[in-house]
Length: 360
Image 1 (cartoon, helix red, strand yellow):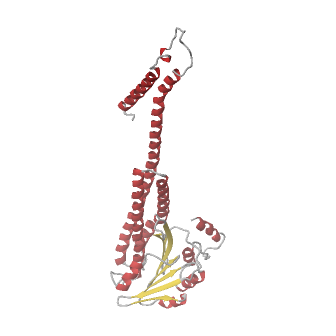
Image 2: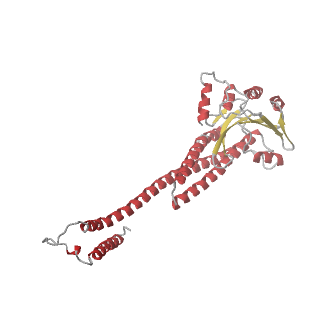
Image 3: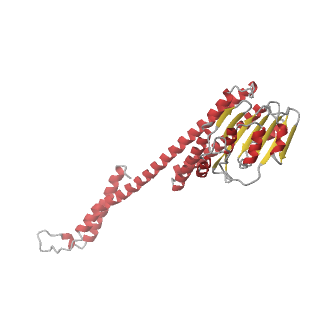
């Protein structure tokens, strides 16, 4: 996030529509894949250059063109110019440090959404920007790098399962958004398991590792909430938009997607409250443990106060044999044992008293 903030300064002073890539730096080759299909056939291939995608504009079939890598500004400009994308839309595609958004134009609909996934180790939450362009017969998807959550959509297209092969590009755009939102539930399930593990540690033995786990969870949930919270507005605008590109049969599915979005946001808020509550539990547990330690030390010190007094009294080196204030125990053969009996009796009496008061 700090890197994106520094990169954002690149656009300072530039005119609107200037294309400057802001996001994770990548020097790899941009990968362009095309899936062209209708109800009876499907054609899937990888394109060598963006010009190979131009003939699909205006074809009678539905075309999904996916671009992995937005760091090559020249390729983005070529595709955007041929498909008639507004310069501000192209600027939003390459500028990844922004919130989700929905914009409706005369010839296309632009949707920017955050795709959330786990890193290679499976612990840290990563966020990637995905831009969708819904046109009359096509869907363009722009991703920061290769790898996504759209495999289930590709499998449905290849096997002709479900409605995606029978419906238009609006349903394809819905399917891609639905795959991203469904993946949110997997991330939330993973975070829920982490909450349970940390919660068990708090109950058993609250350690500094538990505190680190709570802080990591709160950071991931805050990052996730920042990415997901604007999604409700985006899906709501997609559902209410009166563009002719969105057909009536698809509106019902978009409304269901909106309900899933609300459920995701509610789950995130619940997990955040649980993480905050666990932090309070940790602080309370540490405070209670400190109080228990102080109580034990106080009881030990309280027991030894009278014993110290007795030991100090009989430790005075005064010869009082000829004094009227004679200390007979000094010359008594059982004086030492008598002092021990007195001190042990005092200690046992105090322990019995503390036990009766339930201080132990």
